Length: 175
Image 1: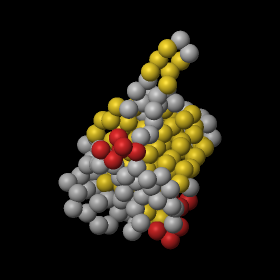
Image 2: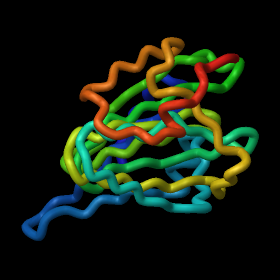
Image 3: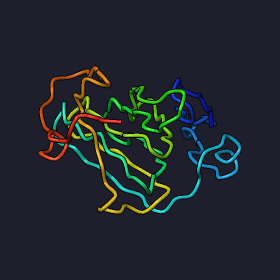
Image 4: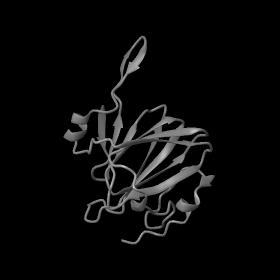
């Protein structure tokens, strides 16, 4: 795997290192030892799939607190613009965001540390995203910030076609 740190402390884009031959290729997408060596939390408690019919669908910006969860996110069908926001008080990148295109074509993954808000916008119809989480989902700990909160000024690549009532009505961020 090829690990590329991003400008938010503790977050990484991970590209599978392809071993190719006449059959196609083989690539590892997870290794506990390599993740630990980079300071990542390699525990997997839960895996989920998000399927989205329409281009322009926004899901996010979600996080859990106080039981933060690290996530490893990969787009297995279609493409998404994946966005994270560092919500860790005291972090050198606190309140900053980062976005990257994850797609079935590039097969890249995004490692998201605990106490980062996470969301994405689909860039194609019928897009599917696969999540690995370090902690179990706890409904009472589920929180979010608005996708269009001026405190973060995220520039989404497409017009919004679908967004849930919950995601649309999260309050503005207040530290």
